[in-house]
Image 1 (tube, rainbow, N blue to C red):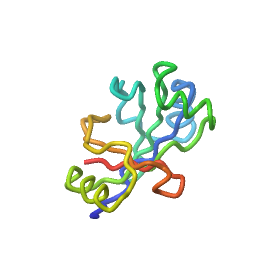
Image 2: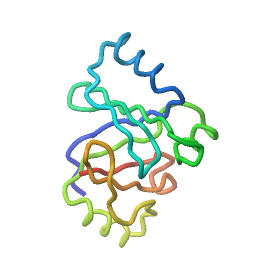
Image 3: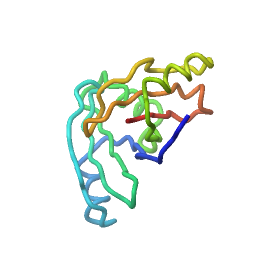
Image 4: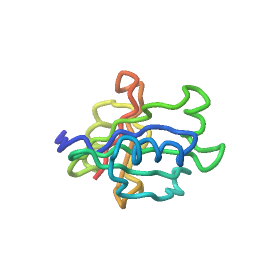
Length: 132
């Protein structure tokens, strides 16, 4: 696998406005994008920090996977995302090696990226996102 860099760290939050205040106003990070991702039933706010991004992820409804995450684990780190080249090929390679995937093919994510998740049971409990 060719991981180019850490793309972002996703943090699950219940109140996006409150957390935006923390990251933007108190920590001084630059808010670079905010958008709704209907496919994942979330609203995200992205803050630049060096080459990486902190992505606040807030569910837009109770059926969102992030809402279920918040119910089980509370607010905090949700996932680590790595930027890769050739996402579809990487998913095929990982699947052929028996890695448990949440997504066997790329789907639309925030900021116009194609994304796919590896199951946390395959990555020692860390929800891992690959994006291109």
